Image 1 (cartoon, chains in turn red, green):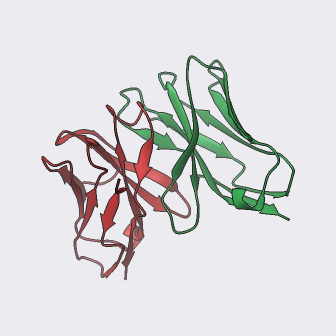
Image 2 (cartoon, each protein chain N blue to C red):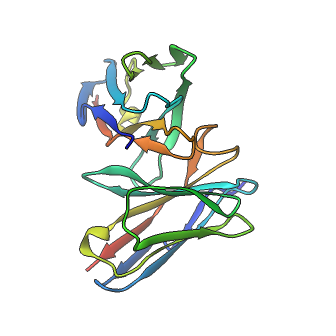
Image 3 (cartoon, rainbow over the protein chains, first blue to last red):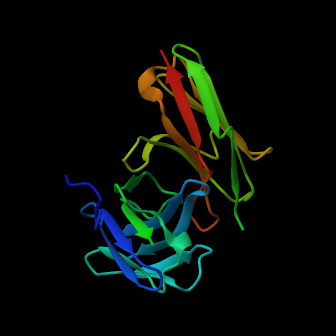
Length: 115
Length: 112
């Protein structure tokens, strides 16, 4: 069974640009969560989707957005990039009803560098 | 909002010693408390979890304890091995169950 796949794995952008990251969850998983990981802040929750609906959003500015498609694949977008957006963006999927019902399976992440 | 504090941020032990990582959470409605291990270049992986109706859970060399009254839970690793070296994260579910709130992580180094 394939794991969670995130693309691209690495990308470099400049300030002011926008970026779209993609996540393919494990087959059959309907809950997808996104996290931002930085050395000083650890794992910070961005948003969670279940059956194409955003059920929760973390404390991030409106420049961060996401969506989920009918096949459970998810994308997140960051517009008007800032230097502080440089981070590892992790996607995780869950087999049951959401993050508190069982294991989150994480992808290896998309490492974004903003110059 | 929900918050999870994790201590220590770094921990160095000798092979064979025990390691303890402690976390406190703020949301009294949290009912699910997993621990994740992240190795270099990989995504976090679940190593053990506990629910609010249980005080302690053990899996071989790893154990987790939960004190709901104090809103405190801990990870215990016994007989540490070099391959236990990694970053460990505790987490607590939010009230709606739609998010896990993570601590900032503990970098565990086990030297042989």
